[in-house]
Figure (tube, rainbow, N blue to C red):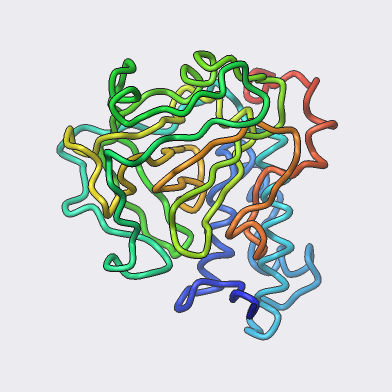
Length: 275
């Protein structure tokens, strides 16, 4: 099998590097910039010349790992992503994927079930009707894509942490790992701290209507505290696990809270901004 490309075709690599800095928590970014950070400083940090496109991918990989470590270290499970009024919603909200909409999974609601695996007490599969009966909330939040664009949408669904509690998930585990129906077997890991964030959502509706095929029907995982590629669509299964299983984009170099950080951060107090 041919190796998948490291970057999405057409991505401005320098813009992506800048975006990796923007995704740092505000406190971290201010401290980093106050220390004289710039692309030049990042060049010093990584040993790569970002102006030279031939080294941009190496630079991006190193910045991604650096940003990953900073996010894991600074992540505040109580800090919320910004929310917006209905007037701010982007219309139309764009379709985003590494394939055309015509190639998006076309899933039958009657045949679909969410499989639950791993470190949970109740491994029953859930029909869409059963999931729709769960308490739901609506949030209007911004989706930020690594390609440099963003859009605001209205998402309705069940907080993932409520579902994890319902199925008796071991929330001491490291990850919730999602498998999707996309072609090429899209999958994505989510660190448990992010899975338990109050805004992380099992999304079933967009703009108060059943989630369209373009946005991930029958279910997507909405994580407004992370970049768009960490918001898997067309989800068919979730697994609670201590094992890092990789992910579609993570295997190609995109950052994700890494397994080796868990031991160092698990028992630390998260008091950023309270000193």
